[in-house]
Amino acid sequence: MDVADASSLLMTQIELTTEIHAPVGRCFDFARSIDAHITSMKGTNERAIAGRTTGLCELNDEVTWQAIHFGIRQRLTSKITGFNRPDFFEDTMQRGAFKSMRHEHYFKERDGVTCMTDIFMYETPMGFLGRLFDILILKNYMTRVLTIRNNTIKQLAEERRT
Image (cartoon, rainbow, N blue to C red; front, side):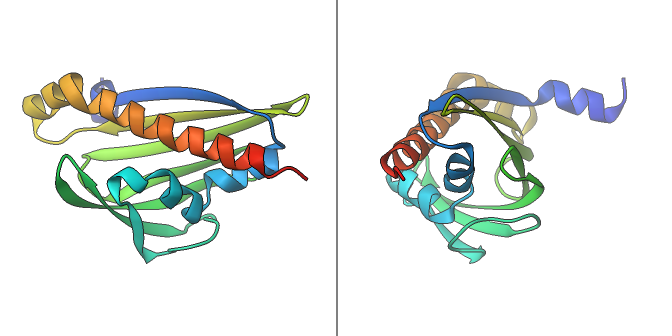
């Protein structure tokens, strides 16, 4: 087993699927919208403070986010590292509290319903203590954060009927 394989064993993966009654292009655009993300993260005071700070993210865009998590102000810079509109995009952490983080977003439309699938993978720092924190608290917390985000995207996309 090489180092990359060993590292992937330590990564936590969260997979969520959300059905949205809206066209795939609209769902894709809300998922990559800085403004929709900020709306969904009001509970953490999340805002974009550097890089792209408004509008729709494109390939190679970087965004630095600032938010309050666990009572601590944190920053995370992510970059759009994969992009194929309207089927897929991926953002990867460049700097932040995780040891590593990758978020894949997949979209499939069938009969007017878009299936949006998020695969969020991360590795915690601090060895055993980081893994313990992940098992006891972080994975559930991140699942709730992603669920709130996805429900906001669903609401925004379904409200905007054409």
